[in-house]
Length: 200
Length: 164
Image 1: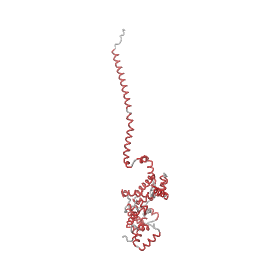
Image 2: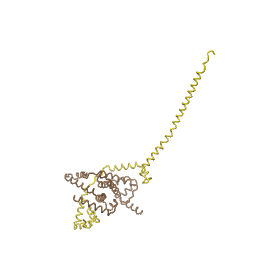
Image 3: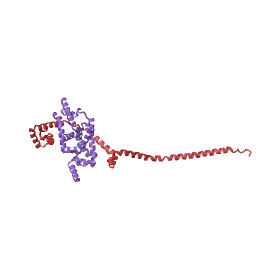
Image 4: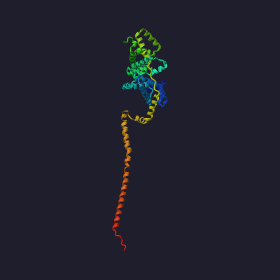
């Protein structure tokens, strides 16, 4: 059993550059931590943002995620994919936040103007007011539809859609079976089809 | 209202993967052929593609530029600020940790009392000085008394006669 674990650890570290970097962090290499942060900062915060739908809280939780990674460096063993571990921490913090109702209290208005519209203005040059309005309405509807999903379904959809994770990895993050993930996704997409299919 | 077995929950991953463009070309071709003859699967696929396209429109916001700086500041504060904690943590069983602040306060109070005690022991010194002063006072009083008696004796003695 112990040999199997050691073999797994060696195998993961051998194939996964992130695990290798984390092992260097364990040895005290600060530059490797900076590299991991650079690589995973945006995906983690984007996931948290879509989970709690509040940028300030998402960044606050993101700080906690990387702080926990840093704190755990001494005991880190590459038994799983680094991103699985990272998203598991992120998901755990997001679920706690949703359970506490912290994100509800700090909920950004779903009707607020999304900052993405400013980048659209630059790229589209001259979007009409009507186009902008349609875009805003679509965004609000999407955010509401995602927000209406139960937390675990929401996490599964976000990891599947935006982070292109395999069922097996989502299962490890959510600590459930692959068939449970398929079931979660089936139900989540069913809800989303009901709410969003008319938009395209 | 699932008519086609492909839409059953256990098989839906095929359709979901197809809509996410994750299906290998051979399987995708077979499924497309099936969808041509199956209106339910066709409708499922179309609506799922629409959902996929709608979700694509939701871009996440950029991370604020001060994120890394804030993180490194917190790490630095932890590294420098908690050497005592890191030293003591492995020594304490988990269940005793909540009692640590109380115990620390008691130890601190005891230490303060012990450190302050030697100052109290030094009090006799000024008392000794006071005793010295009393002795001096007594001696002075004795001296004064002696002088007074000498004066009295001197007054009592008759003055010698000039005829002698």
